[in-house]
Amino acid sequence: MYAATRTLARPQAFRTFASPALNRFKHTLPSLPYAYNALEPHISEEIMTLHHTKHHQTYVNGLNTAEESYAKLGDSLADAKKRISLQSALKFNGGGHINHSLFWKNLAPASSGGGDISKAPTLKQAIEKDFGSVEAFQKALNTKTAAIQGSGWGWLGYNKETGKLEIVTTANQDPLLSHTPILGIDIWEHAFYLQYKNVKPDYLNAIWNVLNFEEAESRFIEAKA
Image 1 (cartoon, one colour):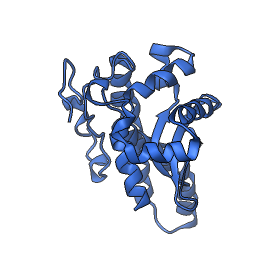
Image 2 (cartoon, one colour; image 1 turned 30 degrees about the vertical axis):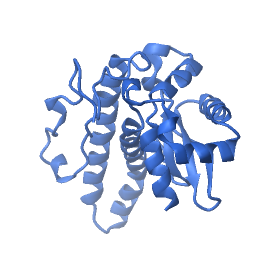
Image 3 (cartoon, rainbow, N blue to C red; image 1 turned 120 degrees about the vertical axis):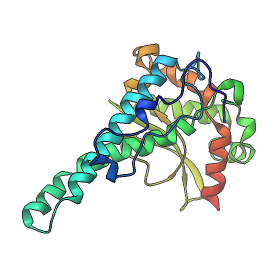
């Protein structure tokens, strides 16, 4: 989709897992649709490289390991107890894999249309209807996301029951299950600290310059169908 510059989006080392046992499971690190430096100056190359190849890879590895352990369990009460004990690892690593796989597509270089809400006319109209204006929506999402205690995600989600767009937050790596995710913002420190330190508002203001509204438009239209 976007021409790679200077840095390859996915090194060869991250294409497969070393352990044959893990290869039974199909979760792999997805490639980025742009180079690691493509979101600069808004998100640095260093952050993107570490975020993708280290943090997301860790969630993929953890999910495969948890699923492998789960698959080996039998029907005894002891195995049932072990199965229950694996739920937190499956939720955390599975959520991390789901959220980040969505997040990478959620971003686009400013030079390729990132940050341009005119690429999402249907979504823009709905945002103006449900929030009053695009500016009011951005302020509300930034405020609620910045207020997350610890780590988590800020979301623009579509509520199928009400037919409205709503701002939702989730803790840690919990995936958004109550709504269809349209836009998601990672507020874990690994997503911004190397560049923005502890000033979350600066990161949240900057990320609007590289949000992929074309992708968000597709998700919104699909969610409403």
